[in-house]
Length: 262
Ligand code: MG
Ligand code: MG
Image (cartoon, rainbow, N blue to C red; front, side):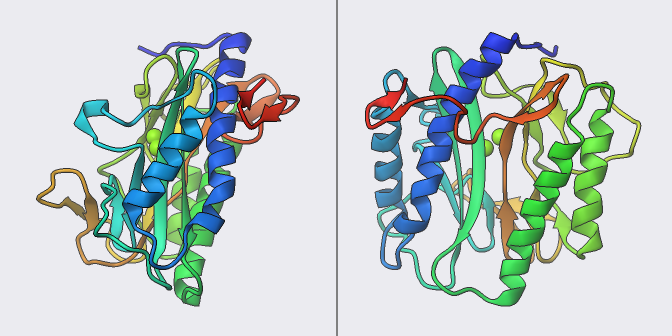
């Protein structure tokens, strides 16, 4: 069942999402060679908890042990931070995080380089981000879920990348995962009708090689079947009469302080 949100509820999600945007703005400085992924996780948890009432949404969710999912290189999503895992120049790092505040969830992901990366890998990052933007542009009343998926698919397949199909985006609100599922592929004009008040986490995961993935024995980390590199970008987006509103960016008009979003 799809839960439509009021404008006030959408603002509440945007305030949670602004914390993610602030966290992600710090990441380029934090992704230093030699840093462990567990250290990054500790940084993120304390960053989020500094905001009054904000909690890391993934910690404990379905038993996940950390604030961040950190997935390197051929890892697609759901990588578990570890003191033994250290960043190196040339890595790409997908960071996925959720924040819960005032009863609502926001969810976003980015993939960033550590130092210099190859041109071919940078292109994967650029196209994945562009695919997300193309999907968001379709998030309007009167469009359908298939329009979002088709727009993402066109960007990805146009560039020759594999679209992960085993994992999809989702509705979000009082629960971290709500209906509907939001696939990163689809047919224009098909699927659920998009309506004002729907809030969706749109999150393409693109692989440089095969679309196929598998899960490591830790039962969390999803990797590409051919060990090609993978990128993941995600925003939480509200469908409004005025068009798509990205909720995981700086909150317009909010006063950001060291202690939280006023
Ligand atoms: Mg996410
Ligand atoms: Mg998500």
